[in-house]
Image (cartoon, rainbow, N blue to C red; front, side, top):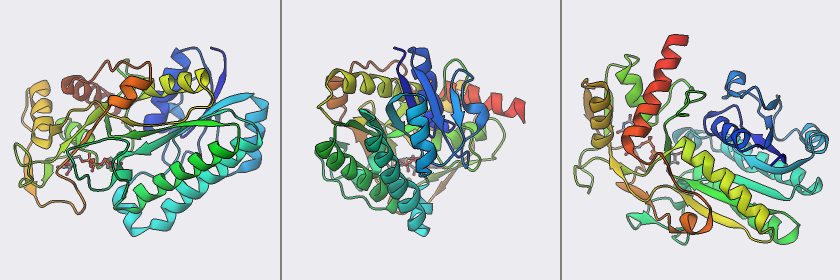
Length: 330
Ligand code: UFG
């Protein structure tokens, strides 16, 4: 393919891995990122970086025209759940309103395909251990609502205009590029695997376990951790599906359909580093479900996507390798 894809948030964690997957598959890539949470060095040299906000419509539209953009992958946004509770308008601005603006730019400039980073947070508290795309969507925080609202805009826009879309609802994204080209670099991370590898490399002295009395096999929370490179590959596969069938839209869970507990994650880090992270049992975080696992039948059926790094030890060792790269740089 020599089609050009615009990647918003391409300097961020998941976006930078999607950029790599697209480039590796032969696509041309234009990144739009305001570098508020992203890093210019995270953008592969083969891509073009335009430093601007996605709601700067004149610049985004000029880029779509100038680079003949035929698809947009939209990763840009704010992603911290507790912050969305304390500052909801930031989430409705950066996620909902900014997406509205980007989608309008896509429609006005006749971009035929759109892929959106959605989240399992759209489900809220699951009533079943595995959630499917037809499970109720009742978000319990503004982050989830801001993403669900964007899904709704896409549904309505795709019914009215010649554009099709895929919304991928991510479960717990973790790991790093197996070739060491990118990884999770933001400071102050709260995600379990990132926190655990920070502890393993001496950046923290302990890992808090938020809840040990859940209704799960070992009492700690269970999540469906998905390797960021598999997730990036799913985006490329989704794009190919959108191109192949321009009238179909897709909302798909992006997970592996299995879960690991907090203790199992920490065990994996201990095993791989041959060390022992200090575990500090604490109370539950508000709103944390006991278990959140994808029913991934739909994505497996719909996309030409075969997960390659679903093994927890692979996810943890890639995350750890990236954490060590960051330490050497610092
Ligand atoms: N956890 C700990 N200690 C930590 C961090 C996390 O015990 O220091 C636990 C949590 O309680 C949870 C699990 O590890 O059981 C995973 O927590 P994360 O914070 O890594 O991820 P969440 O499942 O809370 O959040 C993820 C995404 C969000 C998304 C949410 C719901 O990061 O963007 O799933 O789909 F909104």
